[in-house]
Amino acid sequence: MTDQDRNSGTARSLAAAVGLAWSSGAGRLVVRVVLAVVASAVPVAVAWLMKVVLDRLTVPDRPLMVPVLLLAAAGVAAVLLPLAIPYADAELRRAIDLTARRRLYAAVARMPGLRHLENPRFQDRLSLATETGTTGPSEVVAGGLGGVQGLLMLAGFVATLAVLNPWMLVPVAMAGLVAMNGQLRLSRYRARLHGGLGHATRREFFYAQLLNSPSAAKEVRLYGLGGLFGARMLAELRWSNARRRQMDRRELVVQGLHGAVGALVAGAGLVWAVHAARAGRLTVGDVSMFVAAVAGVQDGLTIVISSVGRTHEALLLFGHYRYVVDAGPDLPEPPPATRRPVRPLRKGVELRDVWFRYGDDLPWVLRGVTMTIPAGRATALVGPNGSGKSTLVKLLCRFYDPTRGAVLWDGVDLRDLPVDELRLRIGTVFQDYMAYELSAADNIGLGNLTELDERDRVVAAARRAGIHDTLAALPRGYDTMLSRAFESPEHDDPGTGVMLSGGQWQRVALARALMRDRTDLLILDEPSSGLDAEAEAEVHQRLREHRAGRTGLLISHRLSAVRDADAIVVLSEGAVVEQGDHDGLLSAGGLYARLFGLQAAGYRDRAWP
Image (tube, rainbow, N blue to C red):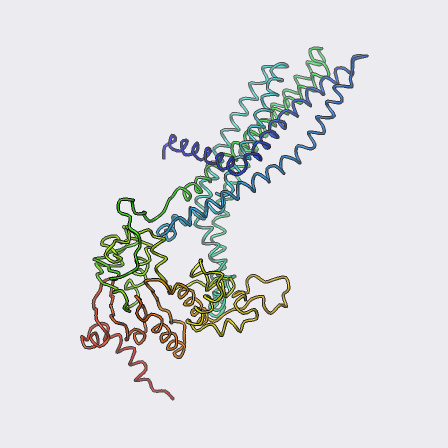
């Protein structure tokens, strides 16, 4: 990236940060600007008023009351402003952070697909945007206003110093330029450091979560993984700490040099002022003013330099936030010319010569898949692990678009259909279903937000999934939290939360999908993998009754669960190798017959005691 591109990006980030601050609370921003101006004027006013008071004290009968009262008022302002400014900063920061966070997660929610979220580089940027990006605008504003305050104060004291000794401005300016250059370099280095630490920080958090997670606790303890994961977490932390230590050392050197140069300039100025006073060229008030001016110039430079560095670093980090917010959707919306409404499914869903891979440098997951899911019929999809079944589900839900080929809904390419409308017509139980740490009612009702609060619909879905009796028997029934992570203050309350078994959670996930019982396409990806034989038989019987006359796609490794499907499609290495019904595929003696035979033999040939 060229310096011009970098500066242009910084300028755009600055404009975006200021615009976000203004939209978050224009009144708060105006108040903070006024406070910055007043805060910059008070030290200069105190210095001048102190000079006037001291000079008048040395001359008899000079009126003192007005300058003394003004000095007292300035002193009160000097005491109150350090209290008011942090409060105003905090108020502005809260308003900005709220708006920034809302926009960030709204941008993530506008990504209808999974391409961004399953991209590790994007995840690193998203992690940085979440960690530092939402505070970036408030840091930019606070740093910018601090810089304005420092500049105004600096200008006032520079003018004062110019009146007393213009030559003192030369070493002061040189010291300031050196310090400014050092701070800018430090801010760039800090921003690069944050960017480089993103991956290591995520890995450190990952290992820490494994050590703390109840879901991982069994394997961690059984296999003795605590030491390994702890060591890996500490290795990531040591790597990060080494980079941060380098940053701290650079800051120590740069800021130490700046402080030393400033002290030398101030000391030289003080020596000159004392000699000038003894020679009668300066009054006592002038000496006081000169000392205050040199100190004020140094303070102003320090404020400006630190504010510039702080703002520059915040702007660079804010770039990660802007990257996520401006990333846009990861699936193209159909243009108005080709946009079609999503009609109820009449003919079926067709995959026509579908090829797919997750990246140009990654292997093909699907290779020329052609198959049809007829409307009103049950189609089963089977095949070995890694054959592309779950990826095919992602394409049907339009989390991704095919790399080549097309997925058609009654002959219309899914890319020509509004994705939100399409998904309203699809119900899915994913193999890696979610277990939300919410109430039982919410866990099911989330499957259809329009009916989230309709308890009778939630109960009906639970009954169809065979989980109603379990949930109704919980301490608070359907209002019981299905988690122990968020306890109430009353720890002895039996209704605080309940942990379900894996099979029970699978039924809850199935009930969530069945909340969309008016959908056109029901996709069941391993809906009974965590159930025992009796429960599995019960669930499949319920599903057969539910999907009678409906369009359904059932994916299962247990071939006994798919034998009654109207059609069975067999995938292997991303390609369709067989299609037909159960009897026909057995007669063909292909992959399906071999897999079915292996599973059947496990039951038929085992000698039980």
